Amino acid sequence: MQRKANAHLRLQILDPAHLAFIVAAAEGNERTETLELKLDGSPVEAREVISGHGTRIHALEAGPGELTLDYAVTVTGQAEPLAVTERSLLTYLRPSRYCESDSLGPTAVAQFGGLSGVDALDAVSSWVGSHLAYVPGSSLPTDGAERTLLARQGVCRDYAHLVIAFLRALDIPARLVAVYAPGLDPMDFHAVAEAYVDGAWHVVDATALAPRQSLVRIATGRDAADTAFLSTYRGAVTLEEIWVSAVVDELPHDDVRELVQLR
Image (tube, rainbow, N blue to C red; front, top):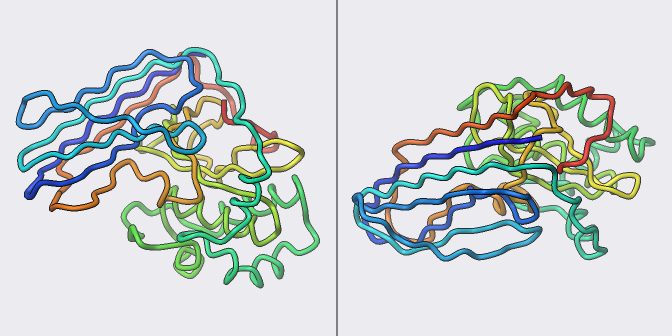
């Protein structure tokens, strides 16, 4: 399987800023890639920082001026599954900024109590997929799973946050993964959940907008706070333009009844 992805960002930096981009395919993928950053047309260099699960952060101080990022990657074959550690399993059982599994615990138990393992995975994914409406622009960057449950609408990260919160409330480790998603419509960066059942991490995408078999891992973490494609730590920055593309040589058929590992 050969997968190709591109990302383009254009920012206007009004005051010098410390920026962190997470757009590169995670370590572990067999890949060829280019990453180009320019400030007012002149090349600038970013520092690569490796975070958890092979997440690659590109950090730099820049501005003021117009900053562009262009990333292209070709991924050949499939990566080995990420290592499973007791530390990570414990981490992904805890509530987090956007996945309030503690406050949603009573709801999860009332709706899915008595289910475990694959049965819980199927039930949670189906419930979230059928009870939420996918509405671009309907949620705020600060919205978590609890707000999504009340609103009953959102985008991919909102679906993933609610899935994760419910699963953690059922004592199933769950985490967020930012991915490139061939077949996604509308095309963008995509977010899915991963849940640990039957001794392995499996992809859960309640949106069902793209086949899970062709996803390319970018970043893995507790929730969107760990996986955002752009973070600004100081300065004044506006995002002026973004586009993403992802294709695969042959788009696979995805049977939602099957367990799929993100490779």
